[in-house]
Length: 78
Image 1 (cartoon, helix red, strand yellow):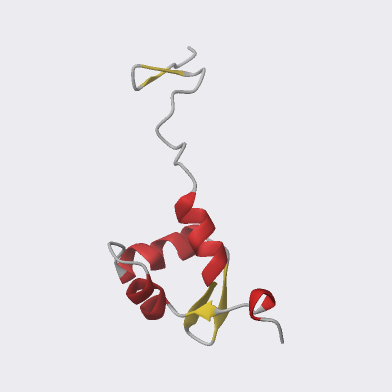
Image 2 (cartoon, helix red, strand yellow):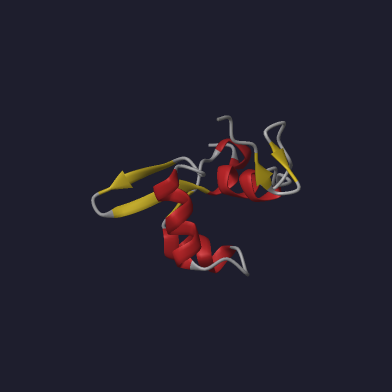
């Protein structure tokens, strides 16, 4: 099989070892929230290595202002 087409699935522990600076707890929370697609194999989460790398390579957009937020304050309609 071609090495480029191989899908490598990682457990949370393996992912934390492969990617320095991210704890097992943080990776587990990303899986639970659905930030990173994962599958459950018994009691373990399995994460595609390339999907995790792609997710972590993207710039975060969570803290960008939205039309309903000004200076970090949400607009409330009364």
